[in-house]
Length: 202
Image (cartoon, rainbow, N blue to C red; front, side, top):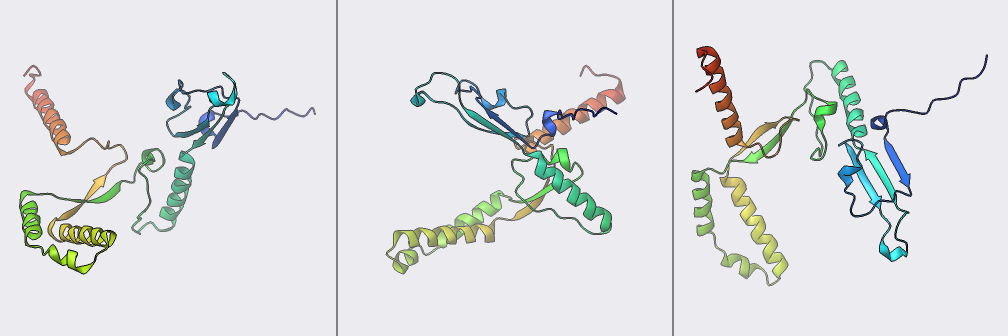
């Protein structure tokens, strides 16, 4: 039996790390123009005019950011299978990650301040009643004074501004606020009403 040649080809999106030498890239080529997919982070060192050469050279490394997410998915899936009745809480910094690709059934929660007119007025009253000279008398060091004032104001905010926990879904864009959600809900309600009445022109 003749040995079969090994096949090293695989989809680029399945690779964890892509390394290129002699990339020939320059400032006229943006990162998004060479990204094989949005979940690849591009790190590059282009040849500059200081090297004495006008073209050629350069190195480029692309890291698959989804690799860690898939490891998270496998760990979470295994934990859910072993502890079906347990509450599953995943804590981490996922600001630059697309969780929807790896864990579509998990949503994020975060705590936000609710700046109502009443709470703002309460905070203003607390700031007006504060003895600010106390901070001047406590220290002659500007850094210590600044740290003390900022800490005091932060404590007042925590005590007067109510906070609430909101759900943040993987497909929710950061610019979608309450006003946009209300407009989308109104549009959907108007469309459904038109379907029921048979008049979609109004």
